[in-house]
Length: 373
Image (tube, rainbow, N blue to C red; front, side, top):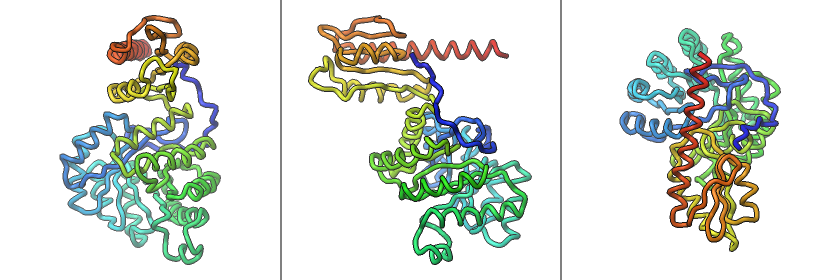
């Protein structure tokens, strides 16, 4: 019954940085981030999207800031939301300086494309003064021209060499408050690059398979690539890059972490694929429950099994579960048979019971926190 089992994965040791109030690295939970795809200067639309991401449980949100007008809009956005914000900035160091004054929680830059040493130093000094971390973001699609010539094409070694160049700049400026990403759309390239760099630095690593694809194909590609790295213990924060609603990126990110027992947030459904033995329509039931229960962030194991072959065993192990039966289906609560339901009332009653269990768990958590103070 929601055993909150500890993951057998031994995570890579990394130093910890703070992005706003979210710890990244060290023994902190692996954080999930997404990125807005609205026009940043449209403050209302961007705030609305960030609020949807917050409701989905996102830990960090990145916002593209390509101009000084966007920087001023970013300042208004920062005041309107609670989640830590990362500003994505390229080339113009003045934009980085401006958003630093407007309350940014992290700067996503590549020191090498900010300009000369004086400009880089100005950004780093401002970040140091404000306590703002930097994310170095290396991408296979934007490697330096000399590296493209040297390697002929993007390779893991080229990504790592690019990263080390940027890191060397920060080292010369005695600035270690940064994290790093090495993204590629090719799974093998990204995995190999992250594995190489993981042994060479101790800063946190931000994971991602860049330009992974649409909702289905991008989810598969990201799950394979990030799954390999997370199983190795590599990764302190992640983003699932999908050509889809950014909220879907958050859902997929948490589902990946949940499957590896690295994060427990929201409902963990155990559901059968259904067959002719099912005593209720498992697929439509699951579709309805997932849609209705999207707002729940409290960890809970919920089993939805259509027949009595595997149903009782799975339902007993879940916090709450339903197994198909004839003439009625049976709900198990905390491992014990509890209620029989007809198909017509199944979804409504099961949803209500799940929410009751969530409310009890939330109340117990509040009591525990109150007693610890």
